[in-house]
Image (tube, rainbow, N blue to C red; front, side, top):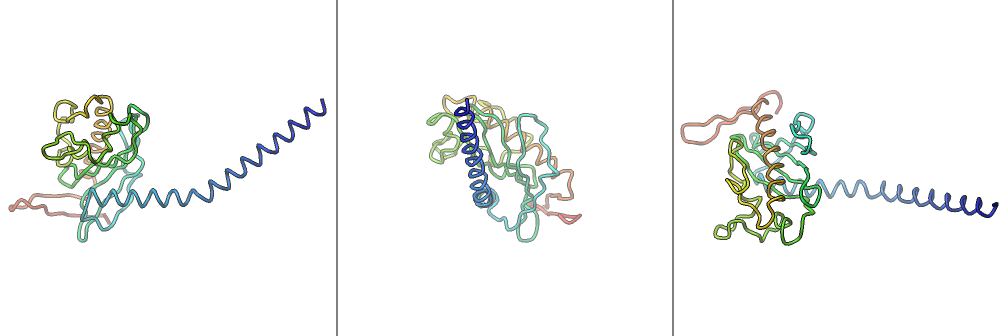
Length: 214
């Protein structure tokens, strides 16, 4: 009996030591992981908005209308002289689990670009959404996320309609499209209700007005 108790105490001490070690490792690596994630996010933001120079976090102001789609970050992207649009890092369920996308919306409510940041779907099938060498339009070399660039939030966003599906991966295609649509709608709504506005000039260019510190 005493031997059993002693063994239990020893195991408990080992478990406590292991937990403490993991906590120390986590505390040391947490900042490094977060820093790397921020670097990756900034790189993706500049890919979506090539003219971007500064970023303003407005995450607290942008809410997802869907219980399935979560907004992890929302950023007001600015160029040298004026805002360019809003980018939303959104996550939602896909075939293989959680998928994370970055969706950029310009001031005219069209999509500046989409990047697939995380995806665990089937390699060779749904995972092709993240494959830069897989094209849903081979003639024009357009990738699955690439096809969203230039689409307006008022478009249908229907897979096998105005959105080309990944071959044999309808579930993934619909899941990612739903995330894009949710993020784009919310970004456009924020732009519409915020003090950032865009009006068309006679020559077709945009005049940007800002107020309230944006």
